[in-house]
Length: 71
Picture 1 (tube, rainbow, N blue to C red):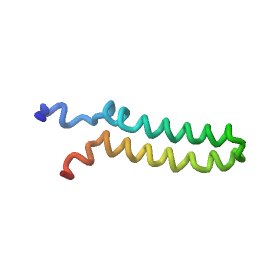
Picture 2 (cartoon, rainbow, N blue to C red):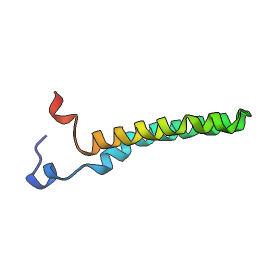
Picture 3 (spheres, rainbow, N blue to C red):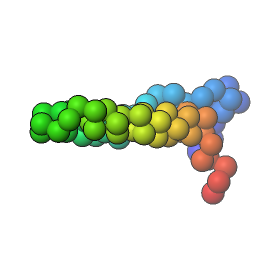
């Protein structure tokens, strides 16, 4: 895929958002499921930081094209 110089230097934030959104929504749905299931709220919110951390790392990897030069 041929990219112009301007496209190659800018981060692809839209592609990163599209790639990470399903995983973020799945993680938040898991937290809501645990809350509505009747488990202690502390346990539901204990899994929230790892979900957010992994989402941010994935967003950074996709938006900066970190994985493009690996193949």
